[in-house]
Amino acid sequence: MPNGGSWLDQYVNELPKKPWFKRAGAWILVPFWAWRTPVKPLPGGARPSIQPGENLQSMMNLIMPLKKENKSPIGRAKAALAIAENKDQIFAGLDNVGTVHFARFVIVNDNICMFSVYDGDFSNYIRDFIATIGSVFNAVVELVEGGDDVIPCEENVEAFIQWIHEHDLYQVPDTATDFLRDQEALNGDRAVSPVNDDLTLLPRKMVLQLRANANVSLGSGYRAYPGFSVAQVRKQLGLGW
Amino acid sequence: MMERGMVDALVAQQLVDDMISNLPKHDRGKRPVHTIGVGVDGYFTASDVAHKYCIAEHFSGQRICAKVRFSNASGGPEQHDGWSDVRGMATRFLLPSGAATDLIATTLAEFFARNVKDFFEFTKFDKHEPYQRESPWRKILDMLQLKVPRRDPYPGEKTNASAGILSYANRHRFGQLAVFEAKLIGAPRSYARAAYHAIHTFIVEGSDGVRRPVRFSWQPVAGVRNTNPDVPPNDDYLRQELDHRLRQWPARFMLMMTIGEAGDAIDAIDDPTRPWPARRVRVVMGTLTLTNVPKDQAAAGEHISFNPWRLVHGIEPSGDRILLARRDAYEVSRKMRGGIACPFNRS
Image: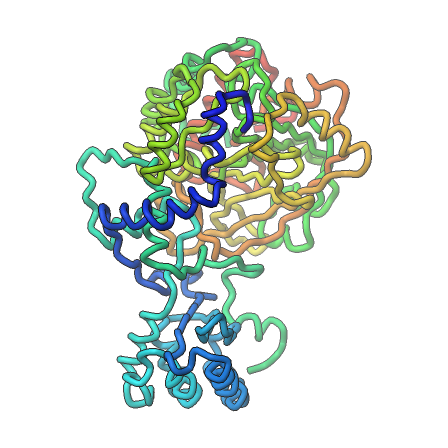
């Protein structure tokens, strides 16, 4: 807010917008503080909950880096083909599993991404998909880093579920301070009693967490009709099953 | 409704006194907080589905006359529309039966205290202290620590309570979300371009007899938009903007009702410091249409004594202890400023 400080003050206020200062922040300050105050990656996926509404319309956000030999237009084309060739299997799987609202495959740079919104338990969701469209997973996962260890997925069900879970993005909570609670849950809450946190450190904690979890989902998603399952929507719309 | 679960009158008086004692200036004839405001006339029309969820008279589908008072949350006689601050939206529904009911909401979606004890603790920290521009060297030090430097004071801002409130939040995790969000809240371009949340849980009864825990929010049809924080703030624009806006076209708000779930922990239902997850079912309960800013502002807003416990058949308060405390504190405040009791109140 320009309100008449000294020239030095005004210059300092503008510092965060200066390219050289941004570079210094990214190359020096962030690595320094990451070294001084190490931050572990937070686990991905939806949070477990007993609440019915929390178990509907959950998000899965898989980011799977293509293998080195596939980091090229040819490799990306292979990934696109793997999806295109299996279109019927995917639709059949969606109809049979019955708990998936949406599923999308997206190529971003040299990553193949699968984003979906599903009802119910995560492991059961993947288990059902392995049973119905395991061949699609195999076709995609064989193109990505670390994928060879878990395919064919039908024969490595638990390992495959764990692999998927590890590639699922951390979902930053809808409320900023709940992110602090996630860190405390992961690292152990070192607060003494009475608590005396330092909320001014929240920006640094967020920066360092986003260094540890470079890809994240921001919030739990914005829903036009929260609280309803695929089955309820289809029933209410008279679409049958 | 007004006889349920009394808070000691002395406690309510103490709450109001403590708030007033923390203000740099206070006019006894005015509200201790949300002092500066503007009254607006309008009407509310319930949605087609509202009555299914709540049998209260204003959800029956008839057009309901409404009086709304928008306000800046700060107490005291000084007006600073452009300063970052929570805003209030108090709505009185004037029902065809002759009764009235109020819905009081703010742009802050959560409160910073769970109960009266917490609130008294907050008032110990909520003290104005001299507020000065940080030195450039201090700002650089903050940046080197990946902290956000303290904002520069607004023109004319000599004191504020931000340091004390931050200390309170550091010591009380339940209050951190509200304090954090209040710090970032900014100033709306218009009172009609902010979302307002009633914070507390109420219990509504549907036409099927089912009782549900719910929370209400007003969503502006014009969308949410704040002023640019990088330009010097304007101290006096919100009333004129609203007047100008309504001379051209009505402004509308959708009343959204979020339904708590069976199995929600009792603390989450009754604790105003805890937001409900975004995954709870939301129902459109109706539309509020604002039509004009009356010239007689005393009648339009300043003389109206809102109270979150002014409820009618079909809506009841939850066990939220802050909601309970607000009932008596609002009444104390009304009496202290010589406000008139609600002529429509039949309870």
